[in-house]
Length: 562
Ligand code: SRM
Ligand code: SF4
Image (cartoon, rainbow, N blue to C red; front, side, top):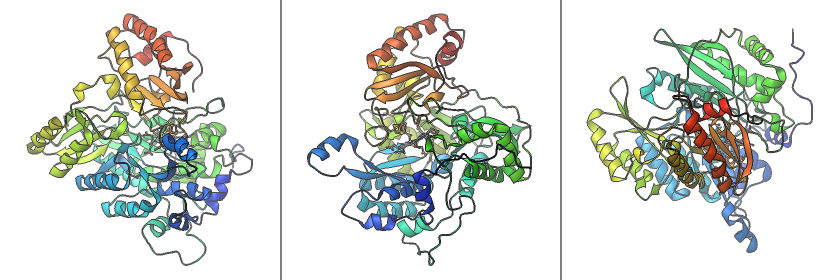
């Protein structure tokens, strides 16, 4: 019997739906567009299609006025994002990626909040050589963006779980299992063989219209929630029973994006719907995605993420439909407990005696600052061949699988380049900021270029109240799309206009409670003015061990959730 609620919303399909349908399996006219030397940009429809290939057309927003004055088109270039499930690259790959970024992009690699990297500023003429270079390095960008399943995250620190490797391999299998099946990527970028007929190949999961919207999966292994598992469309919580990794609690419907002024949009943490043994997790994910494909909102993209589908249909109806399709029922949710989600900086050792170093990379920007030369240090570490690299969902990098005998060589390189996480406060080390200006076309305010200096001022306030050694989770985005998951922070700043932010307070440190709007449209002075008395109150009246977010949640009645 079909559930009467189980229908997609009515309404005309959004223009993006037509673009996907007529794209001939994600080809569009991209190949021709890339040959057109008259403009640095591409046709409007192809700007949608290219996302599925892992790239966005952007322009340097700092230079718009100057270009317009000279009657020149904007300074167009391309951002390219890698698909790196679980966030791992080898030392030779890292060396290749930095060389590529120096020669074909801005030279600054950006570690993203989803455990992969992006490069910015690739001009059109360098797009194809860059994609080919990626192929030679053994990495790809397929489905890193677009209305498909994106990069799959998994806990980064191998010292935190003995099932680490197995869980990491699941991230890779889930990513492969849900990849779009099209030759378009190879045809356009790698001079692959062209399709002979007019009809593109049929994709068994995405069909011809793909998903209503982007789709994200993250895996966390308790007690560590570094992937912010509940902010994903599907959150998988690995479960250990009697010392054995048995499967996953499955959570659905997480997501951060909202629109200022549109109270029907909201951030949502995913709801756990039950347990699935690890042998069945690939088909389970497939069917959760397919139900969203069939019943998600295709007319209004503001409401097309899984979170809205789940709330519209009801969690139970959604779950029943997945169970019907997958042919088995979810088991009862298994017990688990998260206690933290921050990266453990410095040296760790895993159960096999391998050593790891977690390096702090402020806002994920791999570059050389005076006395803290991340880029140079990583290059030299890679040249030794003694380590691999692992990106974290907190925008940092781990040097992994180092033999004990090689550790001192790595330590010497880190010391030479000033890499020492103890130089930084906890609040700075646990902060996240999205890209925002100057490349993000949706940014209303600064984020990664501004947060470091705001933190310096917040550190001053913390010192005043003797809180400088306490941990705080602070996150900033340049708009309400939520790319640094600001609603899951204890202190969230969301850009409203240049120099103005909404201040959200009261999330918890494990990512299991959203914060709420405290004050709107604050400039820097107003931000500091708002935080000062709250820090004073916290320092005086908190319970033993109580975190700032919990204190605010307990003591202050504040406004609406996101
Ligand atoms: Fe994001 C759009 C950057 C993680 C929610 N995001 C964008 C774009 C592509 C802007 C655009 O559409 O033109 C940004 C490119 C900026 C630039 O210049 O590079 C952008 N998002 C990022 C990154 C690089 C932020 C960072 O500094 O690390 C992250 C790349 C992740 C990755 O490797 O795949 C990034 N974005 C996120 C996250 C966090 C996460 O997934 O864990 C979110 C919130 C979770 C979620 O999806 O709900 C997020 N990005 C969005 C949204 C809002 C989606 C929504 O449901 O409303 C947009 C806008 C959109 O899709 O229309 C967006
Ligand atoms: Fe751009 Fe907004 Fe995402 Fe920041 S949160 S990268 S400003 S879309």
